[in-house]
Amino acid sequence: MSTLSVEEPEQAESRVHYLNVHYGVKSWLLTTDHKRIALLYLASITLFFLVGGSAAVLIRMNLLTPTGLLVEPATYNKLFSIHGIVMVFFFLIPSIPAVLGNFLVPLMIGARDLAFPKLNLLSWYVYIVGGLFTLYAVIAGGVDTGWTFYAPYSSTYSNTHVMAAALGVFITGFSSILTGLNFIVTIHKMRAPGMTWFRLPLFIWAMYATSVIFILGTPVIGITILLIALERAAHLGIFNPALGGDPLLFQHLFWFYSHPAVYIMILPAMGVESELITCFSKKRIFGYSFVAMSSLAIALLGFLVWAHHMFVAGVSMYAGMVFSILSYLVAVPSSVKVFNWTATLYKGSISYEAPMLYGMGFIGLFSMGGVTGMFLASLGMDVHVHDTYFVIAHFHYIMVGGAVMAYLGGIHFWWPKISGRMYPEGWARFSALIIFLGFNLTFFPQYILGYLGMPRRYPVYPPEFQVLNVMSTAGASILGVGYLIPLIYLIWSMRYGPVASSNPWGAKGLEWQAPSPPPTDNFEETPVVTAQAYDYPSREVEVA
Image (cartoon, rainbow, N blue to C red; front, side, top):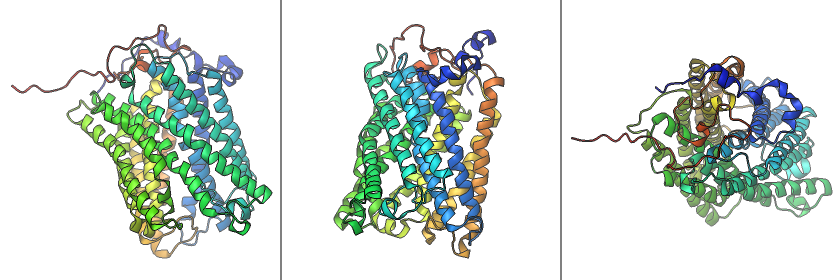
């Protein structure tokens, strides 16, 4: 087990200055410090998580009974729509890049801040403005299109607040673009002396690949939503066949962005996972260059597989075959990462602090989601399970089992650096365990439900599916408790937690050379990098 070293309280207390309330609200709202902006994102993203999670609770409660006694069908449509819109666009996509990326990218490369500090603050304000439009749609009566906004229903026929919700997503897309631009320029131009490309932490490689998707993919969804608004407001024939439009055009445009968006959500999680695995096994990552290049390969191949979402939508058989093959191919770089993480663990000096428990949970859940993704890449299997709970289970194993587990693992790993305080380790391990158990109880039954034919987005179902739905709702209750526990003890730790040293885990990386929490300019002197990434002592066993 690694030792948690503690500095003199007087020394550490003097560095909690940017968390102290005497700095005032104005200094936070006008700050250009990347660390403070990361904390602003952390607070706002957590609020959106609570909104989306509340909708999920109501969905699962309604599905306790086959007849759906809790809400009316129209309300149920609004619940799953707002759950998807908020969780995808306002939590999953920005969570790791906006919070951990903002806080860590300059620290990890030895920079004093991001390349464009004011643009960084603007990106948060843009995110908030977009979120307010979407929250208005919720308060004003909701939206019932699903998070995919499929046309022509969204562009012509829905009488709910589609425009407000879509405008919120459109505006928030600019936040992603600004963040991606900032990261790319920072990584290219502001690395410390000696920080060559192949000395970069793997988290930085993941953020770089994610930023490329931000820049190339987000404008597509922006244009698509703009076209929905034009058809809805001006009755232009873009997607609606009754007006001379083509609904498949919308699906092509939407999924051209939204499948790469899956990698926006999971690539940063993979970067976090690499940091956790190497730190808590005390070994240099196995096959560093392969893990780094696989991030770029995922970003590239992610743009070539969008039509596997459209196997039953009318695409040609030949196009379906091509996209099926490409969908299998995109799994290869992800498999490289899982193999290399596992090989890193082999003969490592493994310790099981809370961040590592989240990391191990990520490997298991992400692997399950990845394997079942191969089912959906198969033309014949996809026809059978398309738009069933099998797809729901697969998506959540990747996005919640993968991305959220890594997000929580990263928050716990870097929390001493962020706050200057340690959290209660026992509670942290307990929450990691019950989140893992609650997640599997929630979503594994949905694989069975989907294979048996239960369609998603329906408020009612045949009575023979009730046992599995009750299991899923029970798991969701456990999962919800698991998410609330870290929220409580992390807030508690900011005031009452033991003072943390600059490197409580004995980790490698420039961020651990800065004080906890770091000062405004991060480093007293610009660091000079002379060693490879993850330069842990060799643990090879000599054979006599």
